[in-house]
Image (cartoon, rainbow, N blue to C red; front, side, top):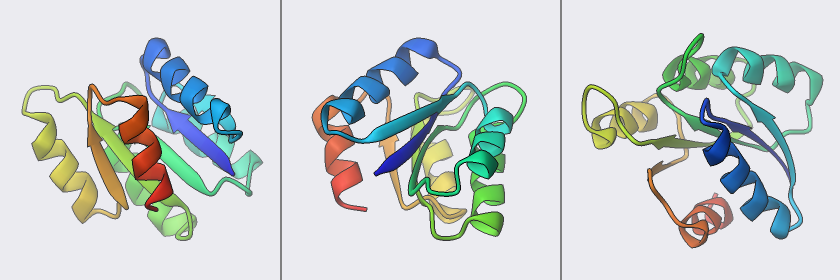
Length: 119
């Protein structure tokens, strides 16, 4: 399965990518929603997108809205550690806008794989 990981924190992207690659998934990475959407245009075979919600240039909420409009079949996992409000508030919004599942940071590799397997 090809999975797009979008997070502005390089360490988080690498952690997620490492877990997914161990399970033989193909992973592409972006550091914000804007570059993530460009990668989706170049990779029409992406089946899952994992996106952080609080990022520079284009936040995850905006990214989810655009993906739902242009790529409705992609499964979306929204992740957040929060910001000015608790991560749960952001994750509820992401869920309402079309995320298939959500994860609160920090999460374990096992929690990530469980979320992916349940999509």
